[in-house]
Image (cartoon, rainbow, N blue to C red):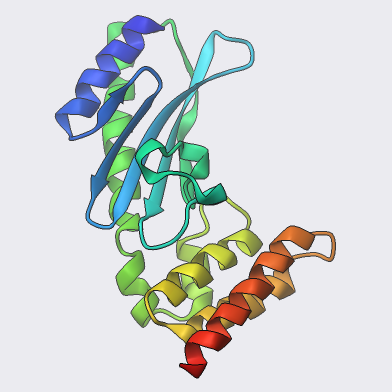
Length: 190
């Protein structure tokens, strides 16, 4: 395990990430990007998780952006499926290349959020930026982003969509969406 992480850490540092062990991050523009290596329950395999957090909206649980974990990011995805801690040099080089490629594509896509919020309708935005969560929860993240960037009507549209998508049992999500609707109404009144 340590040898795999040591090799991958060098590759991640070469592209601007810092960290150690199983968590690496970098800030670029108005995003924090996170790469996490998560051990499987069996212990002989692991997963590679990516997280992207726009700094203009709150992370899950209002997490500290300087200590952000992948699962606290609003955009998330996994690289491949399971990886073995025991792998050949060739397989390790292949994994390194896959991580470098996947993180570049995922983080590049995440950075389009600000511009997309200006030009794309809510349905398109929801399809573009709902990775790693449910569509109902993604509406909350996108509504927060729209409101933070001054797009009040778009924020309201996301709240309406989220309330439709969230089931009656999603009481916390529904409450968060309604609170955001109140914020959007106050913002529009000013």
